[in-house]
Image (cartoon, rainbow, N blue to C red; front, side, top):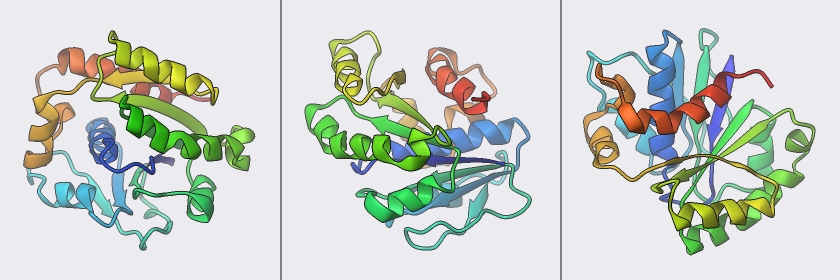
Length: 208
């Protein structure tokens, strides 16, 4: 079973967008996917409730408030959307339960500074130090060719964390939240946007 956590203590950085797209991509690959939401806003859960019946099945993973509950036994891929402000003991407890952590970061100065302590805490966590948990940083709402992405790379270098890919700002992501669908639900090729996701998808299915 793959257990993937999407985390960043900063709200509004795109955690739910990442979580629902990953859940859809794995589901389209005929995996039994469960999506859990620990955030009080329940953005991922609301998105799942609004998903059309004709879409590829993604199951709801019932979790306790800000606490880990094991996914059902038939699960192949568990995606966990986490709350803002995650740190300390709750973060360490979740890191003991998952295999991979995806951290979406906005390239704004305020968002990078807000994530600074989180990255330092990740680097100091035993599970990460011993490489039992893989960490991937992705830029959200940013073009990888811009100065903003270069600043994000420079910011992450102090924590020895590479920027895996950048996901641009696009209206199709706003539409996805409104319709319960993602770009991976489309029968048409995702095009350039899909290419931006590919490094993350390859990393998630790779063996470390």
